[in-house]
Length: 209
Image (cartoon, rainbow, N blue to C red):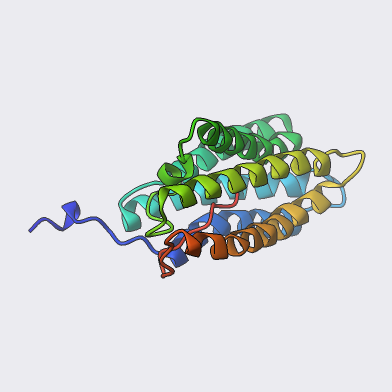
């Protein structure tokens, strides 16, 4: 029997590490890499660390899970692209706009699908929310579409340098958005259970962008 052909069981713990790990390293590297003589150094060091970490996450996902989720692919592609621009131009605004693009993309994808009666989240999350019926997927797609749209707007507000510093934006991005994402995911569970959700170890939430 060929083990390589056997689908690998998704792990919510590993998914969480792959999603949150690069973001946490971004935060830590930005803090420890800061310099009194160069206010942008922390952002540059953090960005370089994030680029390396997200590529490692892609490799681990492929090796351990046998696949790379669409969201991880998008996050990695945009992270490397905007990260390279950040380092090249020595301007943290490029890495700050990445979440807005990702949030807006998923909002457009999910809400566009919902308007056409298609639950696009069902295809994006793949193995998540086992047992959920089609009506539940549609409601979940609508809810997350609106949530991502709000996040895109908030990121545009918090990344404005005349209102908030890079450190403030980074703290909100890592801790605030992460907390809100998990709270929002849990808030949807009662509705999902009414539509057949089977709670288990494989339940996933959208990753951190």
